[in-house]
Length: 553
Image (cartoon, rainbow, N blue to C red; front, side, top):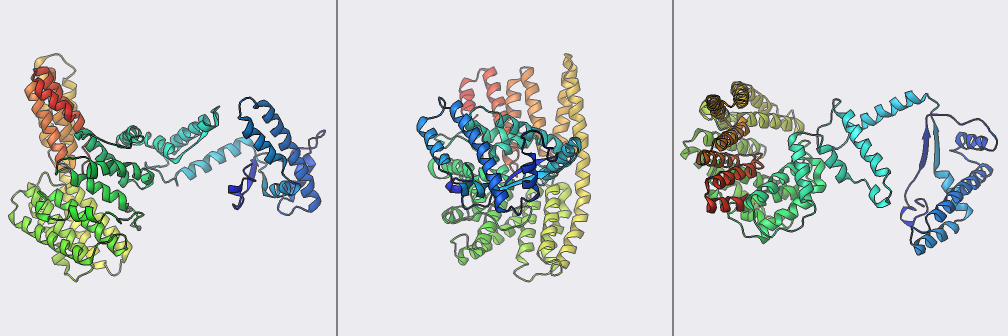
C-alpha cells in the first residue's frame, strides 16, 4: 500500500529484506530456487524472471490481504475496508512488476551470534552520531540503546495502530531522562507545559520556571522543535499579561534568542530571524542608563549583538543608524560605570564587558592589542577582592573566543589569539585558587549532614556551624549554587527546631541570591525557597504573610 499511495509515487523507494542466513535448499514447494534466482539477478531481472517473481509476490500478498480483511471486517469501518480492497483489486500486473523491482534481498550468510553482535555494534556506533539533547559517549551508549530499543519494542506491540507512533519529541524526552539532573528537570518541566497554550495569571514561580526552561532549550541545538512552545508562553508575559516592568525584559530576552536561534557550539548561521521583532529590540535597548547593574548591561550587550548580526544577514528590519547609536550608548555607559563603581565584583564585570566590546569591535576598527586587552588585564589586579565575580566563566569565554578567532582566520588573528592565550594562563591561576575553597566547603557540608543524624542538641548546633562555614566558603560566583543550597539547609534546620523567623529570613536570602544570579541557572530554586518561606510563616501563625507567600509560590 505504501508503494501505490499517491503521496509516495514520486519518491525513490526500496523495500529491503535482510537476514544473516542464506537462501534455503529446495524442499517440497518452498520456491527456494525462484528466490535464489531473484536474489542473484535482482539488479538485472529479465522479463521471464520478473513475471515469475511478480506472480509469486501477488499470490503471497493477496492471500494475506484477504485473510486480514476477513479477520478485521467487524473492527474496521466497512466503507474504508471496501475502498482499500477496491484499490488493491484494481492493481494491474505492471504494478506488481514495478513493486518487485523495488524489493532487495540481502543474505549475509554469517553465524547468527556474530551477526547479532555486529548489528548491535553498528547501532551503538550510529547512536554516537545522534543529534541528542544529552551528551552521548562510549560509556553511556549501551544504556541509551537499551532504553530506545525498549521504547520501540513497546510501541510496535501496541494493539491500537495509532499508539504505535514514534516521534522525535518522545525520543528526546527519553534521552533527557538519562542525562544530568538539569536534563531530567527540563524533561519534567517540558512534559508539564507541552499541552498548555495560554497563560492568564502571573505567578512568579511559573514565570521563572518558563524562563529557565526556555534558556535550557535555546542552549541545546537538538531541542529546536520545542522553540514554538516556549515562544508562545513567553509571548503572554510580553504582550497579554500585565507584569512588573522588571520582569518583562527577562521575557523579551529569552523570546528574542529563541526566535533567532544561533548555534553556540559550531558558529553556524542562525536558523531563525528577528523579522517582526524590531519593536521588541527597540523597547529593550531604548535606555542603557536604565540597566541597573552589570548583569543587566551584559544582557543588553547580547541583545544588541544578535540584532547586529541579524541586520548583517538581512534577518531584521532595523536601520544602521539605530544600531550604531546603540553601540555608542553601550560603550559610553560601560565606561561611565567603570569610573563610578566601587564594588569590585561589579567593576570586574564591567571591565569584562568593555574588553569583550573592544575585542569584537577590533574586527571592524583597527585597535592595538594593548588597548583591547587592557580591561581584561585590569581585572587581574582586583580579582582577589571580587569574590562574586565569575572568574571561571571568564576563563571559559576566553577559550571560546580563541576557538572562534581560529575558526574565522587564524593567520589574520594570530596576534590577538596569542594575547588571549597569555591572559588565559594568568587568569587560570586565580580560578584554581577558588577551586580549593569549593573542596573545603563540600567537606563542611558533609560533616554537617553527618551531625544531623544525631538527636543531641549540641551536635545539631555543630551541624548549623558547619553549614554557616560552607555558606561563607561557597560565597563566590563559581560556586553560588552551593551558597544557595547552604542557605536552604540552614533554613530547614531552623524550621526543624521551631525558629520560624530565622528559617524565613534565611529562605528569603536564598531566594534573593538565586534571583540575582547570572546566568539564571538557579531560578528553579525559587519555588523551593518561597515554599520554605510560606512554611515558616504558617508555623509561626503569620497568616496574612503566609497567604502572600502562597500566591507567589
